[in-house]
Image: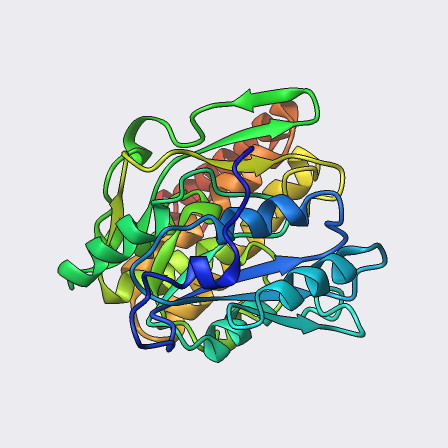
Length: 309
């Protein structure tokens, strides 16, 4: 991204007389000093005819992330709204993302963490235009590519059936979406108690948003950049750890839907839990587990057929 971002007055030139943000960009950063400039400049290159704000949350970084955020906040005081933590909220299991959603003044939320970045300056305009015209949709999203220090490792990020719109039910079922690409209606102000402590919160957001409408895949937006690096909360975890984190999210979504009286979604997520557990164990252990299941079924069937034996 060689094009330099505009100065603040140039960025706001097409916003008209109002300064109340129609959209809030929410950015969570932690030890992203090597990346946060590229992230913030991706925000500041956005070309919109509506006001937006950037809520950037530094979670007590131990590198120069907060210093860099202060630098940009001083240059864009009307746009960038920084929050600096003294104690790391992630380690305290505080679901701070939804608290930021509640503080956001925009009608819409666009989300991007401090190690990723956007490549298309039309992104926000296209997403907001669509949501303004289509009230039956609750969110929009587009594609991304994965890269590391050596170059692109996966493109596109979404493949097959996921490069399409999502029904409300598919959103409720937490279908995969590239989190750094989303723009959604600002409706998630508080998490259900069952979801406190869940690490893979984004799939929970999609499920909760599904109660309010459908999802739109906008193919014409250029792919965003999803960075894979050693400090990545999810991307650099081992396969087993990622499965465990996702399983925990599915289990707590099942508990939530059980509490609110939706048996079909409760059953759906419990099946996902079972599938994730099977994926996490070795082939030999799977055979042993299935053998034990069949043995128990056979014993119970024999007892039913031969009562009193």
